[in-house]
Amino acid sequence: MPDPTVVALGRVDPTQAQGQLRGKAAFVAHPGPDDLAAAVGAIIRADAVVDRDALDRMPNRRVPARTGAGVDLVDVAEATERGIAVVVTADSGSQAVAEGVLGMALHLVKRFGPLNRLVRDGQWARRVEAPVGDLRGAVIGIIGFGRFGRFGRFGRIGRTGRRVGALAKAFGMRVLAHDRFATPPDAVDCPDLSEPAAHSDVITLHVPLSDTTRHLVDRRLLTAVTLGAVLVNRRRGGLVDLDSVLDALAAGRLSGVGLDVHDPEPPVHHPLFDHPDVLLTPHLMGTSIRAEAATYADAARGVADVQAGRRPATLAKPEWMPTGCSKERSR
Image (tube, rainbow, N blue to C red; front, top):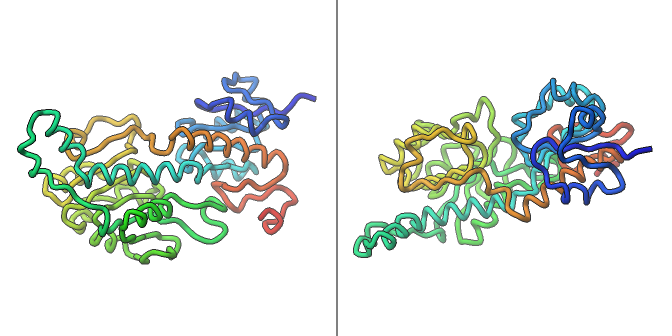
């Protein structure tokens, strides 16, 4: 009997996926219609749409595994209704993202961009016009710190916001954390979003994008921020109202902005992009060499777990359980 088929939706490194699936399933990196129809699982990239039609084209699919935490393009409700487990790899790239957040903060606080331009353009005498800041002794406000306890939103995971906090403490920063769903340990509990906004030198966003969080950073919030604060967004582009951010930069309320995520992607050019104190990257902070390898491996491992009747470590719907498996036994 041939091995079950697992397909890629989007660009997936076959060598990373095959390592976890070897002896359990055949991996098809470039599937045709027949492969999709036969597939019991799929490893899907962030730009792949898994809606009702896609599910219909894969009638035998038992598990799609998303490389990353976001499920914006996955119809989780429809998949759950069909008994399909939607695996996410929420923690695979969290350390890489956290490093990227601190890297952006360092770049903006230390004024690397303006100082580089001064030397490059032969304007050494103007170096005093770009005052260099410090992370030690500064306050970082982490919006979306992550749940604690054994099972969080995606199951047994550590969240990116918590990793950012750990790195920030190593720099000597004080951590203020806001999270709608949990009281963060080892940090100041800020039940109101306005508190970290008003008291933080660096503000970083780690909340999911939803109807209630779209343009979370708007004109109203930015009028309350610490004068000269730095804003970093590595979660979803739609969390930030770019017009309001540009106005805050022009008014000096913000001294720097780092954006690794955009809405849409690739982004439409915005005047904010031309500001000298804005740092832009193309949604790559979570896909370092090690993080990407771990993401592929974790996605394939999640598919293999479902095939073997085990509960994967991270799920978009943590309530999903394999048939005949109790939550206690799966822990």
